[in-house]
Length: 137
Image (cartoon, rainbow, N blue to C red; front, side, top):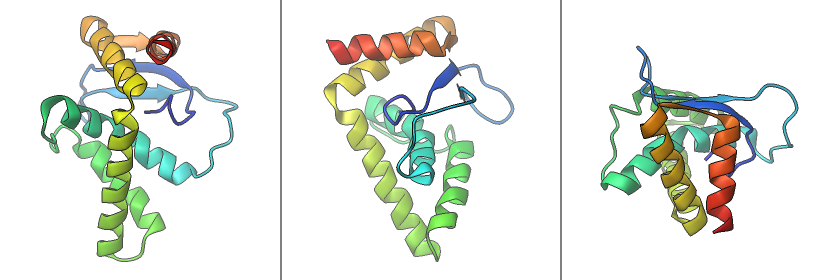
């Protein structure tokens, strides 16, 4: 999701720690301008939940608990009131799912996930390579 939205990736890992089941580190420094940084951040946070739901057919809310807490915090910056926050979260989860539904994007997601399952951690360069390979095919 990060690459689709123009966020440069430094490293991706599926090694769990006390707080999360995996982690995506972003490159520091200059990035291309982002139209809506808050929405982009929320979409990146929802990407794992949406991808797992597409793959398994169900949402794993416990596995995405930390991401969902971050999503809620960011959504509260944009929306006033609990109902508006929930609507924003749902709209952006739908948007994340629609992005993943694109054939090249889903193919890239599967390739990256396969490599992560094999190696547990991969570099941003490897992620970009897998993403570009899938997008080209």
